[in-house]
Image 1 (cartoon, rainbow, N blue to C red):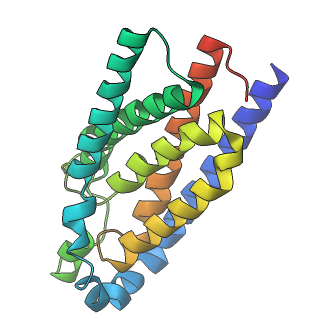
Image 2 (image 1 turned 90 degrees about the horizontal axis):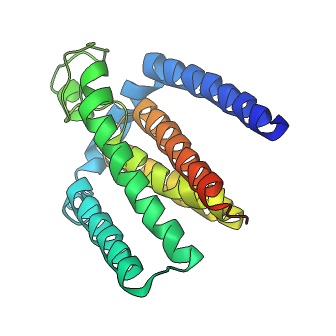
Length: 207
């Protein structure tokens, strides 16, 4: 119980820090940074074809289905394969919730819309799955990473570095504001850690 309470306190502290960072970025940093990198971003837009959310979701779905079939046919999976399956499912579900609930709720225009004259603001209940906040790519990647961070703690720093690299690319490429990637990363990692914790409790898994 003590460990759980400590985890909740740590998460709440992280949430407060994330909320403060998002508010500060939204008010002071987002638009200047987006404008600064806007010209550079045009050279990176071709990456959207290879690393688009639909491509990643398709790969994760294929992996998850393949592992489920392997579990049915073989009767068991290795711990690494189990973690991979949970990570894929958590990533897909978190992305879906973000796209269908959070993005429409906050209704923040994308950097390209802001460059073309839209106001960088929250338009509550007026958004769509194409809105900017929170970043779908970072919820997708963060949830995947969060599962491994919980189940294989040695992976914490490597995944942290990869998430930081992905966040920088999304900002430099002009796909998202700084506040988008901060919020998306926090939501994704939180969901992934939660999924990993639930799986740990269900199976008695210990790292």
